[in-house]
Image (cartoon, rainbow, N blue to C red; front, side):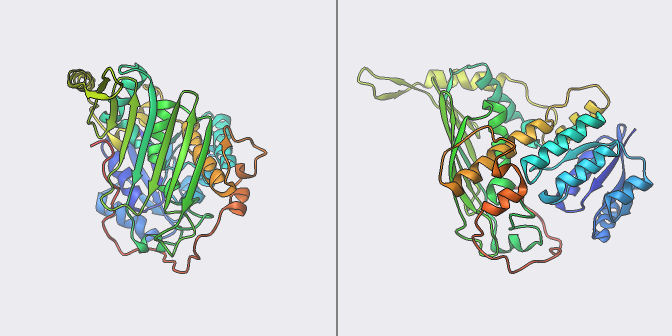
Length: 385
């Protein structure tokens, strides 16, 4: 039996708890810790976690309980220290995204995992969804030819009070704005499907959230050897109409799925190629659907990897790649220059202090609350549906 501790009792902790509860024959939640201990107690009570105790800190948990896997559900700025402590205590670690607040912190976490021979996984729940699996396979197999142009619209909507929570809306505690907290999902999927770009150019702004230092909208252009990708990141878009569009040599492959194909007339203009669209659609739908998706699927993979029954699909190196692109986006935006990857460890933006010294504060954060009254959260549209 794998003993679990969830660190942080915010909304995402409940998603983790629900996911672990789906595997009662494999794991057991033994502890939930939060500086607001009543929140931990509340989750234990509402979820009926009869084997779990509430704690104030992770240190208390590790001192009192025998824990095999620590699930980190803390604000981004606290990910690295908590993960390293858990790894050094001999626990495997599952940490929410973004992985950390800097590349230096990512590397510290990776070294701790290697030193202690423990698994470190960064939550990438969208990789565990049927549409993503199908599109990735079509791209990898070059079913419709090579990818030439990628458009990613990571469009979300958050109201003014979203940043009132004490850790949100600051470079120091949240680590960034919409690119860090929302578009991290789409960037991870892009890396999974295409690999790492060679260079980044970007612009960021804050146009609608006056209680936030960080960006609420931005555009990034990513260069690959033989293709170009661009990302629109936003939390000011009503409807949250997210999409990923992969223009290949023979067809458009997109999430949500709506394939299109053209062929060239003698004068070079387009004509619809409906027969090819039908063929691509059939191939897409022939790829088997996943039996489990999202957080539960990721957590099952983590549990199976701990038991030695599966290979870990999303390790710490994958989480670091996503943060490297986000770091490059921020660097390019403030320096107004094209940033070539990879970012070296002597770069100003490699360390958190360097990032903080460069990034603009679009507004002064003047409102800060410890906790919102309990309300239903929105995780955005289900990417891919």
